[in-house]
Length: 233
Ligand code: SAH
Image (cartoon, rainbow, N blue to C red; front, side, top):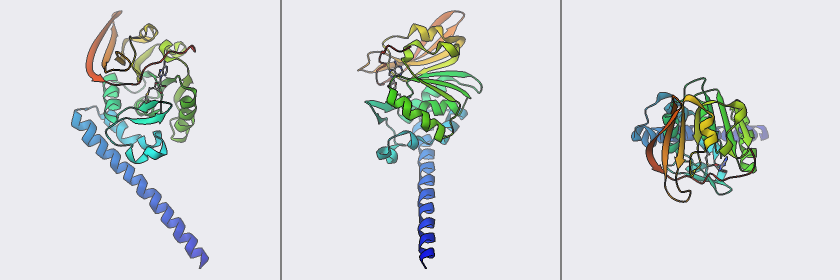
């Protein structure tokens, strides 16, 4: 009799787990349809990546239920995970293709890096807050994003050792485009970066480096947490 009870409890636990799993899958599908495709993001690799990455795993447990909502969420240390649409838009603008080398500045939860890693195998990401770096590393391991390389440093200086990059995605607001990042961008490469006053609305820019010239295009107004300056290179 006792065994039957234990078995029943195990079956119920497994059922509850797979229910919440499929509930998250359903919420993710809805998120892509109503927040991302509805706002005209069309890139198939981007839509597929957004359908695949379990966003709820990147937010603190108390926000699991809100993970697929149409807004940013706190991730601790005064930082936020961006709104799903902004992550999708930045990834689409970056036009990343398989095999390209990508640098992200501002790892935060690691969500944007994971979305990029669904498209290419070569993702490098820098985070200035030690605690967030230390949380992102095991999260990448646990979720199977083993090829993402993370370091704790001031991303203003880029990552010289692995430069040049095909794509650079900056997910914190900069007052100007950091010259080291322009330098580390490949000829023909693209940088997606919010530029403007750190505590106001910024412009999301697409910066292209072609024939030695740097051109930038203003896409939409955005609001990011500031790119802060540290001492670590
Ligand atoms: N891409 C993240 C969200 C970014 S929030 C995600 O998907 O969750 C911006 C992040 O940039 C914060 O974690 C902040 O600590 C980090 N940051 C701010 N200034 C930085 C700098 N100079 N170098 C590296 N990271 C920085």
